[in-house]
Image 1 (cartoon, rainbow, N blue to C red):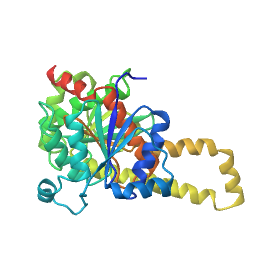
Image 2: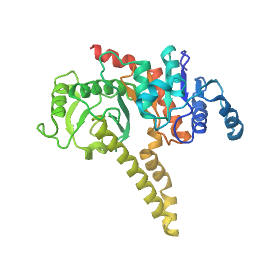
Image 3: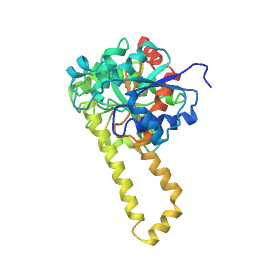
Image 4: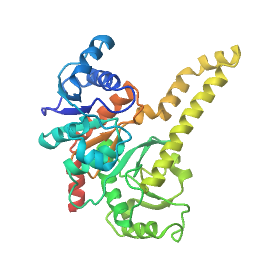
Length: 336
């Protein structure tokens, strides 16, 4: 057990099914990490009914009242000028003012991005944050970034993403030197847009060059050839949502096949354990919790429609990054 007192601030007002899914997710997380404290940001008048009606069993928590909420329709001006009493604003402010803390929200992605930059600031040397998450592959998983923070990027941004991803990977798999790839429409050096070719040259001339595989095509993402996959946010977000949709489609089609006849149901029972393992390997819930890399603090974006278990996975990521000083490792890499 760590001697440090870790506290996770939770936006319990954002996303579908909140605050129940956030509170239940915290309860699930607490089973394995009972010593973590929670600061829960929401309207106090809501929470008593949730605890009583939904039978939430949670300890080590404090409720911080919030009189405002950020909706999905709020634009940047509204978020900056009129949402200082919101759960996202107050939660990030708490993280700014207290050590060994991190923030998790299933709310408005744009608001989380804007307010994380405003309140927590950026790590020195990083121009833009990147949304980063795990993508399953046939060997294990890869890190992919950016998944939607930046529609447009330049070569320097992609170089910075590579450095941040390298730091991130050292936490989740410290025994392995990660291989890095840059998403493109072909593997030849003359393929793709100019900023991709410039990024290729930058990374090839950095200390990461021994671990840089160059350009990779999207059909190689699940093959496990790369541990860190770099992309602009527009391309990355399309890839992510396509993968999530495909995962749901495959799972539902398999379910339909095994329900067709008694013989198929019997076949399912024979290989049930293997099928459950397969489902878990491609289940988006297991990978929930995208990290805002480059922000000078721990800020995690949960999927808006995450269930309680998926939300607990996002909390677990937040805990790991606090415990392992993710931002310190990023800063050290930038200094080197």
